[in-house]
Amino acid sequence: MIEPLSLPEVTVITGKVHCDDRGAFCETFRASALAEAGFTRPIVQENLVRTHRRGVLRGLHFQRAPFAQEKLVRVLSGSIFDVAVDIRPGSPTLGRWASAILSGDEPRQIFVPAGFAHGYLTLTDDCWVVYKTGAYYAPEAEAGCRWDDPAIAIVWPLPTEEISVNARDGAWPDFAEVVASLAG
Image 1 (cartoon, rainbow, N blue to C red):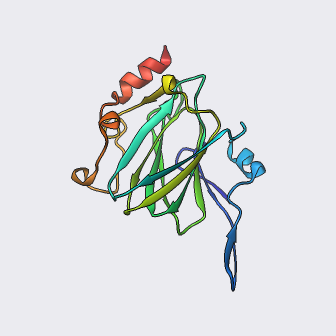
Image 2 (cartoon, rainbow, N blue to C red; image 1 turned 60 degrees about the vertical axis):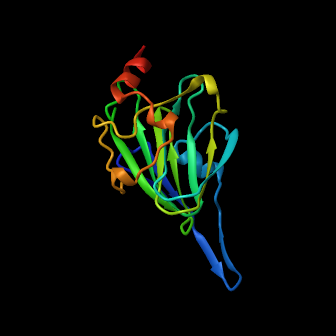
C-alpha cells in the first residue's frame, strides 16, 4: 500500500505481512511499487545505520545536484521519527515538512524524493535503520539545513533538551540560506 503524506511526493509504503506458524514474511523491495511511489532511478547504494540511544537526531541531510538522492528508509529494530523537508526552490510546498514514525515492528518504509532534506530522531535505544538511494554518496555534494530552524518549525516528538546532534549536524545553515544557495 502506498500512502502519500502531507507532502504528496513523500510517501509511506507498507508491505503486506503474511503470517503462519513459522512466523511472518513481507516483501520489502519491489521495483514496480517503488516506481508507483516515484522512485524511478535504479537503486545504487544501500546504507545501514545503528544508533545506540534514544534522542539522537541525524539530519537534515541532502546532496546537491547532480548528486541529489532519493531515499527509501526503513527501520529494522527500534523506532524513529522520520522527516522530509521540501527544499526545492520555486516549489509550492517549499519549506513544508512531512513525517512518519517508522518501527522495526511494522513493514513501513518512507520514500523521500530528491529535492528534500531528510533526517530522523531515534525514539528508542538501539535503532537499526537501512536506506536505499538512487545516487551514490558524493562527499563534495553533501549538504544540510538546521534541524531546529523556526522557519521550518518541525514539531519533534521529544523535548529539545532530550535531543542530541553531532557537531556537523548542529552546524548546518538556516533554511533561508540553503534555499538561496540552491536557487543559484
